Each structure stands twice: as C-alpha cells, then as structure tokens.
Length: 125
Image 1 (tube, rainbow, N blue to C red):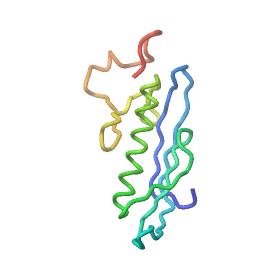
Image 2 (image 1 turned 180 degrees about the horizontal axis):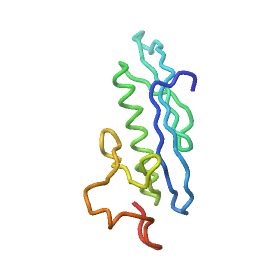
Image 3 (image 1 turned 90 degrees about the vertical axis):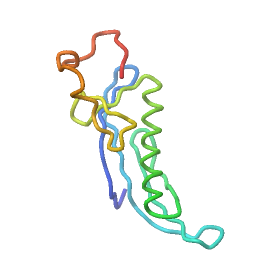
Image 4 (image 1 turned 60 degrees about the horizontal axis):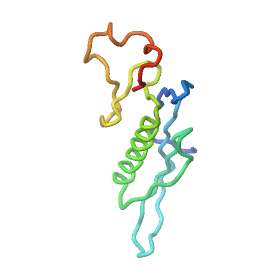
C-alpha cells in the first residue's frame, strides 16, 4: 500500500497450530463520482493473509473507515469460528474482537490460569 494511514498487526494461530502475523493496512484514500454524479469516498484495505488489497467505498471518509474496520472484525470472526486464535501482537493475550480497539482480554482472571501455553487438546480461543 503506497499511503497507509492506519496499520496494526495481530498474532494468529490457525486451527492446525500454525502461527503467523496478520497485518492490517488501511489507506490510499481517493474519491470518484458515483453513477448519480455524487462524490464517493474510497479507502483501500488489505488484511494479509486474509484479504487482498481492495477498495471500500462510502458517502464520507468516516463511513469508509468504519466499513474498513468492520471488514477486519468480520474476517477475524470467520477465522475464529473456524478454529483460529487471535492475540495482541507480541503477546499470547487473546483480543476481544467486539471491542472498539481490539484490546486484549487479560487481567480479568488470575494470571495462574492463563500463563503459559494452553493444555494439549484444550479448545482454542
């Protein structure tokens, strides 16, 4: 992406136990005229390796940013629904996909229950 205006990373583990980093980039803003002659705002989003770079349109810049972030949220939900796990980058703290900031779910239970790797055969978050 030539002009990212927002970027973040998530540490992921797929249902087969393969770990990788997923990178979100949002940027390359532009405008175009829609079929009615109105200005449509576009922003591009890539979510490697889940979503190739694609445009997201809307009637103003706020709307397109919201749409782009919701696309990330939906991709993560699908990944988790199929057995994947998503963590805050550089940690083993699972994120809250529904949280506006994708914050990690940590600190709500005693650390002795979450330190280390999950037990073999335990369901992934």
